[in-house]
Length: 212
Image (cartoon, rainbow, N blue to C red; front, side, top):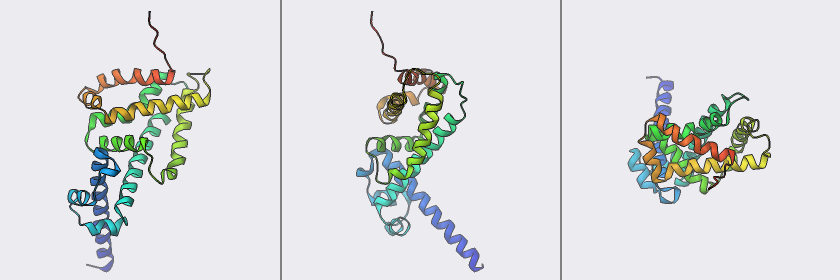
């Protein structure tokens, strides 16, 4: 085996270790948040030694932050893909469906997809250090949502639309963590969308129910 081949094998082994540590960290972060995760639990779950965390990330905190940032990027990329595919003539219900689709898919899929959403939901309450590194992607997501919301709600100013978007995102984050999310995950995909999309549509529209 040549020196280059050996170096390639070391790089591949290192990447597998990093991937395993982040996967383990993601599962635990999704369950408990950053304050409830220990180094030993992550390394035991990943089948790695404690020194691997120091070697690849420097510290438990850095590993958790890298995992959270990766989860946020996955979520934002998925949402940008859905919203970006909409034309300017998209209906409010179509906007709501695209906005909620990453969460609906995660609820239906479970596993790591849902762990990503639960991690995003937890850090939405307490943003981690380094959050500003993703400001560009958050801004891009906000612009895309405003692009398709504004034609549907011409009488609503930009700040109000941003507020409604944040409320809709908060609703989806709550579903990822609350017991009702488990109930929704048991539904067929069509029924899940039928129940959830009108609620998100109402959050965008700002509907206020009236009694008689």
